[in-house]
Length: 222
Ligand SMILES: [Mg+2]
Image (cartoon, rainbow, N blue to C red; front, side, top):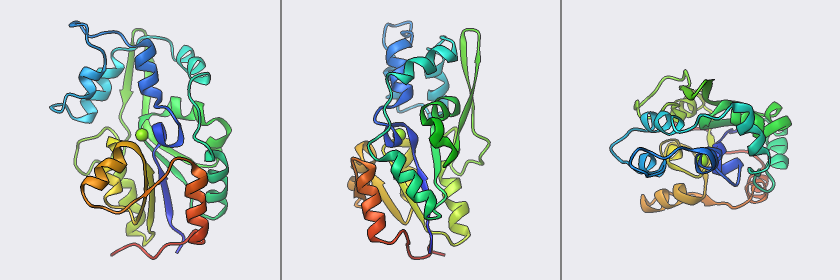
């Protein structure tokens, strides 16, 4: 069966994380002098609270941020060719991000026409980056954008799911996908849970693996 393909954006399709880059470059310090990592690594805060608290540290115009990302964010090797081939094989690639839609669309550029992009939106007001959480229903009410909800929609149609990711917002969906490509902290988490996954560094590797499988997987579990 032709699988559905879901891909994280920051640190997966890209080498760098756009939000980390912007916060490192432009983020104000907290009143106690610490940077945005004090929020990110506060385990008492859910993801949806963390993201807005971090964006509260930015106040530059969006156009300035996008222009700066042009010279700072690189798509991962093989990404463009992989997305074209996957789309051509009928996998209907969907970018699922816990990040921000305007940044993703800008970095993807013309590639955005090959994929659906599902992420949080953003409204930049004078002095404030306001996160507009994705409208997706939330299964566990932890994240602004519930990636797992999207997976389950496809699986309920009988489509097996391929998930490609790297970070904390990928832990939950990766546990439910039929085939996972993982790097960075997602790989570490899945390894610690004894779950199977395939490591990747470039999308050439992901493409080769899927070509070997003829771009097909067994139907989703009922
Ligand atoms: Mg990521």
